[in-house]
Image 1 (cartoon, rainbow, N blue to C red):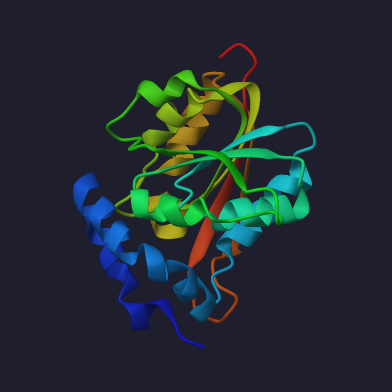
Image 2: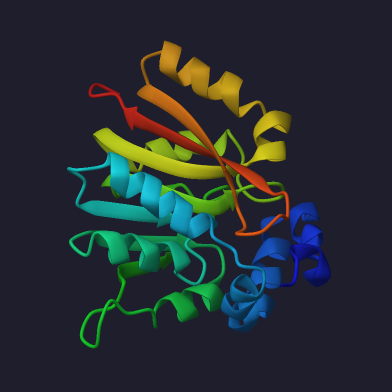
Length: 217
């Protein structure tokens, strides 16, 4: 089995601008799914399993940084009654996600939007029962501060399950910022679960962050 290092994956964490990141994923889009198979990338599956094990009420879900739709597929394998929208910075990745199906008649995603959360705040007018994200809160991508924009997309009492790359979690002080949100009453029921992102000995931990948005936020 190949490792992410053989694909020079670390360079994606070094980008400093949204434009560079978008161009990188546009170029990689048509090979991305085969890459995830080659390295046995299971983070989307882990996020989906945790979300579905803890969520019993959410119907409308927003997949943040949905990429080619790996998380949407995993969610609907477990709970086909979910209605999922997706947002991503890369139009080419979204073009792949559009093709993902539940069955012969139904696509995985109801709507897909090209959105740069760091620079585009008009999307927050749409609100969802739940937010999910796999692999997007990581170095060079989204950081703890971007959670504030994400919260605006979540209904009161809405449920959130997002993965954060473990070194990014520490470097950007996700614990401190999430604890502040909990202390201020913005969120509640905060929980962390550590998982390995690959089904192998390759050490790439992610922290799954789980919380509810407060009723009166």
